[in-house]
Structure formats: structure tokens, C-alpha cells
Image 1: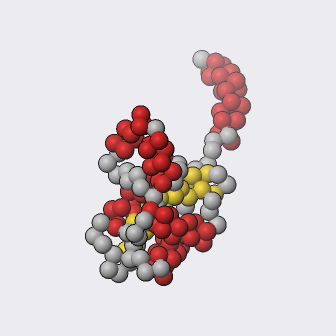
Image 2 (image 1 turned 60 degrees about the vertical axis):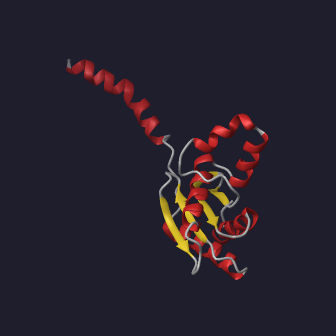
Image 3 (image 1 turned 120 degrees about the vertical axis):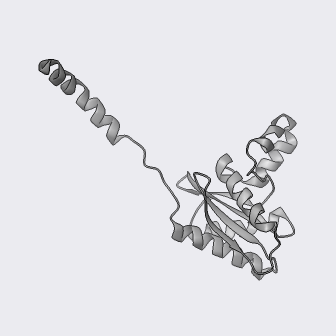
Length: 161
């Protein structure tokens, strides 16, 4: 019995060692960068006269940062979180997703996948070296395009794609 265990150990040890060294590491967005992206996005919109909320959501869907400008509407926080969640869950910008659904009605069911999803412009995935690490969402400007421009400023501030 001891001999069989030793033989099995010898046979499988290289496989186990090889598998252990090939496990992917999970990239993530540190809180410091998430905060910097959110603050930059908020400042960009406020400088344009838009009292918005900005959320950064981690890859697992949990909110890391939520900032609400003074005098922002009561709906803006949930809008920002929903856009950030949607962008990280789907791995794409929310305006593009909205357009995709509008031009492909068979995909309208995407809107009902998760109650946290908000499929309107203003949510962008946060990627580093093509690895999806988080999502940022802005809610409260007069259009999704403005929300997305502010979110993009947040990405630029941290060097994200």
C-alpha cells in the first residue's frame, strides 16, 4: 500500500505542480484607483454644471465607491450603480449595449437578466491590459452621452482602457 501511494505521488506530482503554476491570477481594481476614477468623473460633470452620482463596481458586482454630488437627484445613485454593474457584468459600455438591444429585438431579454442592470448610456467597463477589473457608472446628467464622457474622464485619470 505504501508503495502504491508513493508511485501515485511520483506520477501525479508533476501534473499537480504544473497546474498550480498555471493558475491565473485575478486582476482587481484597488480602492485608491477606484476612488480616483470616481472623483475625477464626478468633478468633470460638476465642472460642466451637472450634479451627478458616480459608482465604481468591482468585477464581482459589489459597489466599491459611490459618490453623490451636492444637489444630485435622488435617482442618480441607483442609476450610477446600475450602469456600473451592467458594464462590468456585460463587459461593455452601456450605450453600446442599449444600441445592440434596440437593433436586435430578440436580445431584449438582456434587460431582465438582473434587476440591478441599467441599460442606458453612462456605464463603462474598466480594463487594464484587456483584463476586465471593474465598471464605472455616472447617472444624472441630461444625457447618457454626457454621463459617458464624465466616466471616460475617470478612466483616463487612472490609465485604464
